[in-house]
Image (tube, rainbow over all chains, first blue to last red; front, top):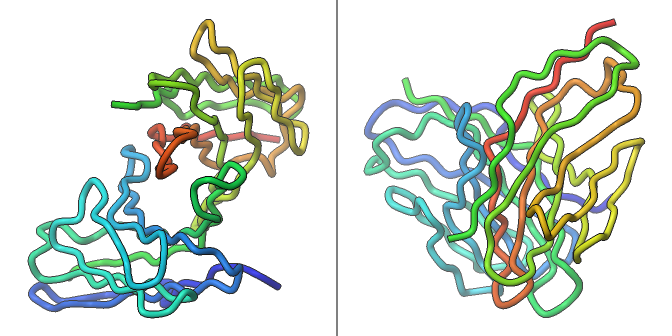
Length: 115
Length: 113
C-alpha cells in the first residue's frame, strides 16, 4: 500500500540536543512538507521541498533544518536553537504545482517532547 | 495574506444530530478549498474538496459548498455518528504557483451516544 510513514511515533529529547524525525513516502510524489501542530493553533509550515535537492523555508523555519537527497525521504532535524520544540510534527507529500489540485497526503505524525 | 477562520469548538452533539462547522476564508484569486479530518493521535486525512465557485464537495455523508459571494465553505452532515468525533480543519490553497496549504485552527467535534 502506498503511503507516508513517520518514525518514531513518540520521541523524547533532553534540552540542548538535536533530534531528527524521519519521513518516507512511496507515493512517487515530488513535493514534501513538514508542519508543526500546537494545541489551538492549527498547522504551521516549517519547510517544504518541491523537488530533490531543493527545499525552501516555510513560516516557522527557525531552529529547524531539512535535507532532500532522495525523492522518497525528507528528514527534519530539530536543533537546540528551537526554543519551544515540544509539539506534534506532521509530514505530507503531494504532486507538484501545475498539475491537478495538489491534495496533500499526511503521515501519522511524531510527537516530540523535550524534557 | 491568505487566511482561514473556523468556528471555535468544541462542538458537542448527540448521535444523529445535524452538524454545521463554519469556515470562511480570505484569499486573492480563486483558491481551492479543503476539509481535513484528524482522529485522535493520527495525521490528517482529506475529507472533501472543491476547486471552484459553486462546487460541492462530498464524502462519507459530509458536504461543503464553495460560496464565493460569502467566501465560505461550511461543513455539514445530516446525521452524525460517535465515530465522527475528531478535529476538523478547513484549508485553502492558491491555484497558481506553489500551492501552499493555509489551515484554520481546527474545530473539535464530540458526538455522544
